[in-house]
Length: 87
Image 1 (tube, rainbow, N blue to C red):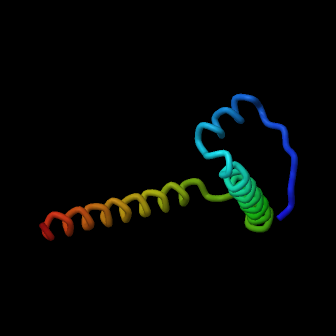
Image 2 (image 1 turned 90 degrees about the horizontal axis):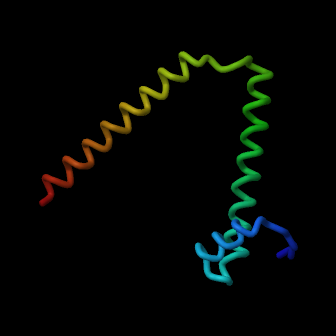
């Protein structure tokens, strides 16, 4: 473990205290920092991919999102159907 001292906006501190118990603050902050570091790594990877491969194809991206949305809807319908037949 490594101890840090940080300063945050008062409203953020109040919201944090309402959300987590006093002993949970360190874990919450640790998880938040880990999450942001991962997001930064992903941003760097996307930037690197854009440089190597060029900008993404927005039409292809929309098509892929539609395919995943349809697949997700299909799985959701199948799951609901299974739950109804089990009763």
